[in-house]
Length: 560
Image (tube, rainbow, N blue to C red; front, side):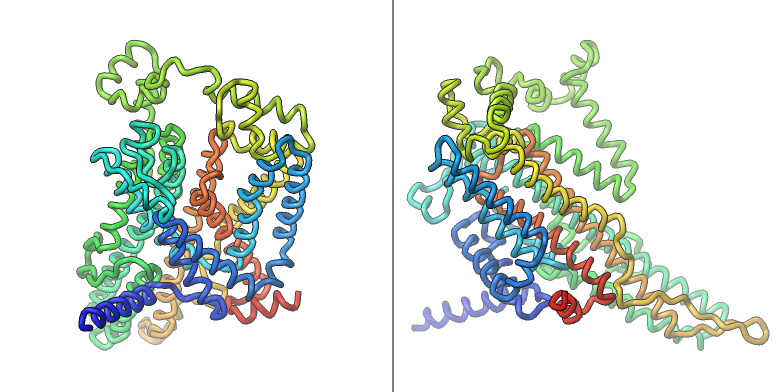
């Protein structure tokens, strides 16, 4: 009896702790769906069945509350038209059963996109979702490293529960696959997690430096105040102590899910003491990078390097840009450079990298397994049936009949869709996705520095007799508060940039591979796109209404 009570108490405390870590939704009617979605996405990579249940509950709850709003959006109607086109292609498919099954890789995710773009609409939610994805990737990395170096293997009896089995030494052997069915699928997943973790890490660094610089600035102004205007004027600056705590508080409340930090930077420290979030994110970035290397995916390597370059260019880190260009240039010269230089560099750079780039690790592969052969066959299929295609999932039986080689896809999403669904449906899909990305890029370029309800005010000064200055304390506090808000908006912009970069990397990955057949990676990809569109849609509503009140935005949408 005592043991049962302890278990109940432990369960209750665990639930309360989890609830305290869940983020509050700006719309109270969507709080329960948002809670379900957060928990579902967190456990989704390891326990896909339970994770999918949480995501589905979030989807169903959002549909119940926002169905009229979702159905009225022109973009969602575009996806409805695309769904009808895909159904038509299934009717005219060579293998209709396979084509109907192939619809499951698209139609449910169109609904997911339409729904979650109404559920995720603020930069704070983007940040929370980034933390959830990064934390969820940690056990995936640990299992992958154990699989690769310790020979870990899964229990076959638990496959129906978890939905995956850990293959010793990876799949294919020698390439880390972790809880995914193939190394390339893990590589795409880790690329997304790596970019999001890098965005959070850069945000944490900027927050640390911002707090340190603000604190040292206040201390400097205190000394100047004592020297120039006497001790009486220093009372004005005492209010800044509270503002420093407010800066720290706002930076802390941005990240509601991660480990809290109780350490406060020491006075006048330009480089504050690293907190637990910074250490965790540093380990997450390094862990994702190491795991990406052992997936042995050239696509993921290239995208990870491009992501680092993009972040460095965004933040103006010229030394990092130079270092990355030098390292990448050395690796490429060791693989494809002129003969004297190539041999000397190969003595320094491990063969693991240059041999993979030159494909010397897997020589003498059959012609049917080469991607160029698959692309040529897929393009010939598209030319034969340019309007309706051959039907979803029809590439595999047709390619096997022609080449006597089974392949699940032609290693190019665009060519696969052109061959299986026809050019009109392919162009419509990429047009809709491209529109979302274009709106995202425009929002990033015109990101507001201040929230709509905070007006910019200059420090009021008043010249009086004897050339003395009387400072308006309220104006100083408002000015500092504006600086705080500007810092927060800058970090919001950085998080939004990481989402654009993560989805762009996923899109580029699918130009030379296909990852939509994995339920988890496909879901996360559509969640990224839905999050981008949700923030863009809300920002357009804020600009049209003129304030950030959720009630005003809802009223405006109902009236329209």
